[in-house]
Amino acid sequence: MSRQKQSLGFISILKDGKKTNLTRFDFKIPKKEIPLSDMLMCHFSDLGLSTAEKQSFKQEYRKELCYLKSLDSSYLESSCRALLNELSSPQLKNKSLTIKANSYGTFVCLAAIFSGEIPGHVEIKFELDECLLPLFPKSFVKDSGAAHSFPISFRYCEKSWIKPFPSLRRSPKFMSFQRTQDYENCHLKAA
Image (cartoon, rainbow, N blue to C red; front, side, top):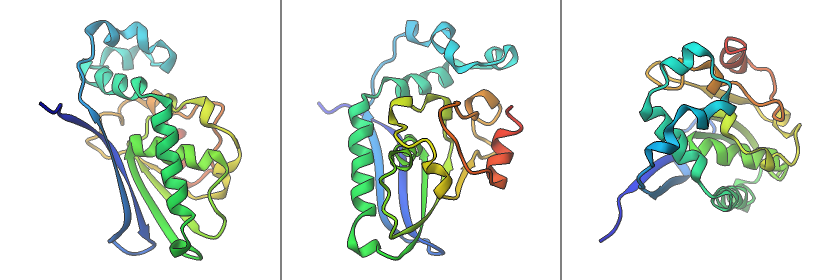
């Protein structure tokens, strides 16, 4: 009997101005039961949630965070490598691309960006939706200034469960981003 899979997001690589995917990565893991003890608030103290945020931090939100926290770093590494290999393909040389990602896909994009290995022969802008910045592993930041080379938009839809939690949108000190309008909308309100 096969286990049901939990969708963790996607990455779409599009030619700038087009709606058709050149490539799409979908991230799924076997759905697993998260023990109630792993969803206690004490396991989320490193997120720096305010008192008001803690009061409205539902169990379903903690469950989502547990899925992301429990992923093996080798899965992120292999996903990042697959994205970097795709971006290095000769078909993308001298192209202008938009990379859209959500949830776990945003982590893969950030790992690729901060690896410092994105090839210079493509022009890329990133649109990262529903990114839980405080959960991004510090060990994947190899080049802390690499994000300044790309326009990066962090977007949170109105119905997003993340939007009411400024602490979940605030980037850790070990990550530095170019200050764009989208960055300001996301981060300055959270500070």
